[in-house]
Image (cartoon, rainbow over the protein chains, first blue to last red):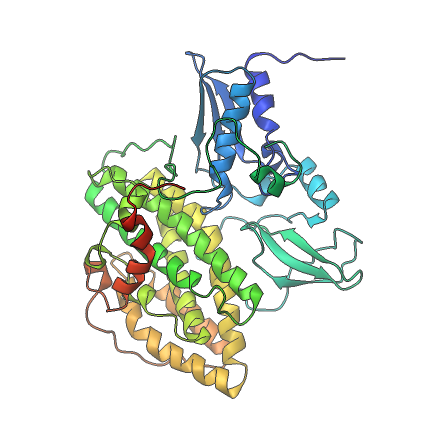
Length: 171
Length: 276
């Protein structure tokens, strides 16, 4: 069955399919940064994006790509807005997004730390979250650096299959 | 972008002819599309001063962190320090954009970063001191990230929704920065005789500067508690300190800020408005 999407559903579908510039196996919908798509009374398509990290350099690229794809889909007037509140957390990554990350050898994040109302506690003990190897599934892994090639990833390695891997760290 | 691989797509010609991955000055407004109206009852001048001070702390810190690139003990540490700097740079961009909306000048982020002189900056002096050795940089990062985390936690409830959102986002990033610095201070303090000596010297050097971080709605207790927790785990006593006179928040800076800004600003000033 072929479903023909029309109106705002079609516009939303177009925006949802834009790949993330730094994790191109994910769409913006998988990543959870597309907060909404609507059509204003004057016909302008308004898409709302939220940044992952404050300094994420991909934000401008995402914004430009969403606008370009919507225009290519025939929407003449397009506006992409930034939404800062509520802040993005890795919990916004969808189940499909997590599966795609793992399929591409990137360990998906666990549950994000709960927003604290008081001071954020500092834990200095060595206990860390266990991150299973996305390649062989072993739990015998270790962190090599909490900061990786992009803001959202840490570097890990598996001691069973000896392969390094990236891990989308909880935020 | 049509490729599966991001690097291939970077080389792709964009049909609208813009060079999106080659930014110079002239960034897009990082607050584009955000509702930037000022709520009733918020003092615009006070809000602008707050955003400026926090933006300047972040920009100057990001520049110092970037200086570690190619000089840190290991590649992983360079990546970490550059990432921390990038987070702070992102925070600075949002804060400058907000400042320009509420201080009545309408300036953009570049005007704040590139076209002000040292006396116009409102960062704390601790941020501008040269990097020193790795121990000094880690102790400084511990202090600055602990304070910023505590302060941003409070600002998440700011009556200005833009500042509140910027702060709430920053809290998540700063928790990682503090964790990184704290673990290094413990490792260095609890390491060799030499690393212990250097870390103790760094604490003695940093502590006199912390007074200017604290203001009326203060995070002093929270920050000092973190410093005690970390120094205890590191086998270091938290030494007593006497606050230094003067305050970067009033534009009273050390001799180290002007050369830092000269490097940061030289290209933008030599070629105002250039893009590439």
